[in-house]
Length: 120
Image (tube, rainbow, N blue to C red):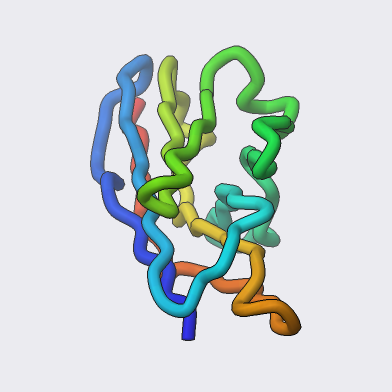
């Protein structure tokens, strides 16, 4: 009942920038946490960054100082600004949203992923 759609991936050279966007839609009463995860070939999915409804953020050590997460609650959206990209940032990036449907139901929804490829 809650759909999450990412956009903004692509191919970029090392040192470049990309901005990922994610929008959640459906029977949403509120969204508590929105986050970005990534999965490189042969590796497990890992947290990149997440942001709470109160604006608290946390980042993977590998992206601190290079990536910035933000959200627009009016649009049920979250963004990931990625700068100084490295080849090791190459992965499929997934958006995650956790929140509430009405008074008694919760959701934990994932997008289909968007590919980010950083060439050296």
